[in-house]
Amino acid sequence: KIAGGTVDILVNCAGMTLLDHAVQLSPDKLEKLMDVNVRAPFIFSQTVAPAMMAQRSGKIVNVSSLSSVRSLPLHSAYCASKAAIDALTRSFTSEWGCYNIQINSVLPTIVLTDMGKEVWGDPEVATPMLNMIPARRFGQPHEVADLVLFLSSNKSDFINGQAISIDGGITCVTTSDSVSKT
Image: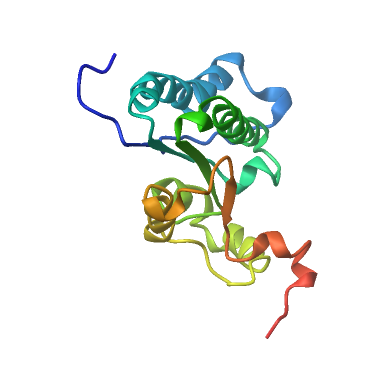
């Protein structure tokens, strides 16, 4: 419970990944992933919402993933957890938007955080994915942070309930063959 003061901004950005075949994924691993990626943002949002409602303003930015709308092999649980974040973003907006609370989610593609480097640091693994991104590179943490900062500012007051991709253009193409080789 929040005692006194105001809560102006919440950024839900904790997350973990789990790469495994869906049929082999243990219930314990799935529960841990959902606790970190879905349950925690739900509870944090639920905790700050009353203060934001009382002050009739607030911003919640959920860091989701492009995996919420695009799937990759071995990512079933991760994709499902991030799709849940986008659904929460829309649901919270429908409930709390009337209190002048803006809730949006950011959908980065691969970003070279420690987690991103762990999964995509091997050039043999990274090259096929890089060939699918028109920008021919992975995202940098500061680029996602800049979008989160914008969504946390009053410059984004009329943006609400949106899932905003930050992906180097990958959602504009369907296959690596669709990307110009020049």
